[in-house]
Image (cartoon, rainbow, N blue to C red; front, top):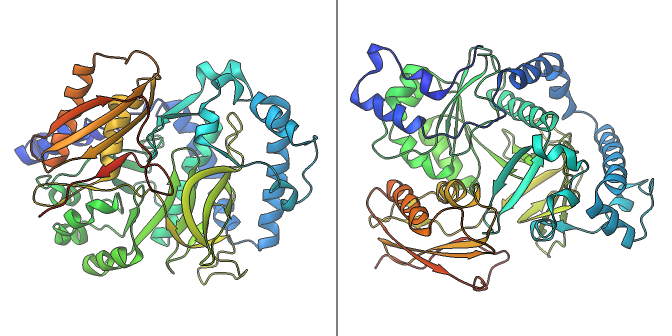
Length: 470
């Protein structure tokens, strides 16, 4: 077996400095997905070797060809869901749908829109096309930014396709094919499905970036070509500007948190490197990726994207249909995010003729701040909650974290059964994780509620900052 994990990269006598030992300890906290196994890596490598070129050409096809492909996928997806998934059988049957009823996108857009709240109210066997496959299915359980836990089921084919689409995005950011020996360096709580493909296209992951992390020293050692990060970490990365440049990093990619083009342009100029953003979700995977001209283009061999109920400025709700996940179909799925779509059909200067978004305003959590008023990344806080509360516990129905002061955070929860551990253990583990992110010890209060208080927001937020620096 020829696999690489983050912890294996920090070894050898020349790396046993105190500073790089800190990197090793942090890297060992990264979650290793069950998909990261030799056989599935091999499937992904074989598929990439065969299909990388055609995948690269797909997104620059004529728009008519892209839409022809999508409509065929949608017809098959809807009919299969209607026949094999009890939830969709009931939902579409109530609308008068009959098998073969999709002959145009207009037909498709008459189907009901679904969301996480609706799907999570049904037993898992009701929302998949093969209940017998659930035991072996790949799962991810996330709260997103809504505070409502939700489990996604997928098969191996979906995992491989999603990974290959990510690799294609890496190629576009580099403006060249990713080489087998190139490293990807991830400053992110959520890693890729595979740490490498049989030792090629390797990734190194740090789940968090702290002010004391010797990032520049390690970049000089590993010399990655791509740096994938939360936008919140860009100020810390800038402190290692010289090493970032000297190590050979060619591009920086951001995801998981909202950031503005003005912010990314500032750090791009300051670091002397292009910064590209991606729009993705735990439920669907890649939705749209940013090109060198600042436009977000939908990944149209993986998702059918709609912006519905747009206001006078063109902002509407993002509705996605996952074209890859046949085990648990997500058809006309409302993410709760808001975006503005480019309506005039026009090929971008980058060569893409895909659906284009001007701007995405999603994942609007209130970022926490330290007593020095430094930002604590929302995505890292959500990752801590997912790891400690959400993933291991199916009885957690909803939660919210509220920052009351520089040192005090309140956790509100609603359980529909007994928690998976004693609450004292859960709170201690979460307090330690949050204190690490803040850089000092915080006080964690807990309150069990019958229902989370409603908020004046276009979607429920799970992270709220009530404290302001005087």
